[in-house]
Structure formats: C-alpha cells, structure tokens
Image 1 (cartoon, protein in one colour):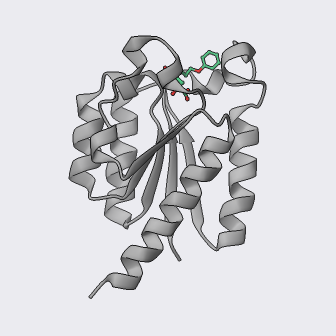
Image 2 (cartoon, rainbow, N blue to C red):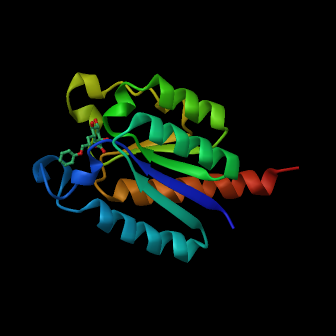
Length: 151
Ligand code: CA2
C-alpha cells in the first residue's frame, strides 16, 4: 500500500485559532480529517504530523524516505530558511510536494524564496486548505507512476 507523510512546520498548530485573515478558520485537525478521507478513498496509508522543531521535521523526512513513502510538506517559515530540510529531502530520495495555504508570491518578498522547492517534485500554494488536498493527490499520482515504471 502506498504511504504518504504529511508534515507541518512551525506555528501551523495555530491554524484556525490566530490570524484567520491570512490563514483562514480551518484548523490543522480539520485538515488532517479531510486528508484522511482522501487518503482512505485512494487506499493510501497517511501519516500526519506537526512540529515546531526543525530537527524533528528532518527526522520525519528521513523516516519517510526509508519507508519509500511520499512526502507532502508545509514547512512553514522553515521553507524560506532551512538548508537542513532541503538536504534531508534531497538525501531521503522521497518524492516530496511542497504546499502552502497562502499564496506566498502575493506576500512579502522574503516569502518568495523557497529553500526546498528545487528538491521537491513541485509546489502548490494559495488554495487554502485545498492546497493540502492537491498536494496529496500529486504525491499519490507520482508514487503510482514510480511504481508503474519501476524495473
Ligand atoms: O501559507 C503557508 O502555508 C505558509 O507556509 C505558512 C507559514 C509562513 O511562514 C509561510 O511563509 C507560508 C506560517 C505558518 C504559521 O501559521 C500560523 C497560523 C495561524 C496563526 C499564526 C501562524
């Protein structure tokens, strides 16, 4: 059964409780619930985690890679700063999809640069919680393509 890790970075535990004007009113628990429905319907095993610690996220990327799982990652502010996460994604061999709730390109210039985008298969941003659903669908599609073309 294909597996996908959905990883969330710093402060995303505050979703739906603070700054609703920027990030909306849907909580991270509700995003997890919606994704579990999607993953279940697709026959995919989903692991959903959040951490405010860079090293913990790095460890989970390694874990996903060792299991041959895909990764959907909203790295939060670490997106723009973390060489460690970039190296972890590149080194893990995992198929990774970067997602963001907000349209980072419509925001401050410091959010226009992603440290991890180049080592991800692609980036989805600006669709609110739907970014996660699109990211999961992309990761599942890529995992299935990889399996279909494996020697
Ligand atoms: O739009 C996204 O998903 C972001 O990854 C969210 C990050 C931000 O640093 C990125 O540039 C874009 C921030 C996550 C913090 O989430 C909060 C939610 C509610 C209240 C405060 C922070």
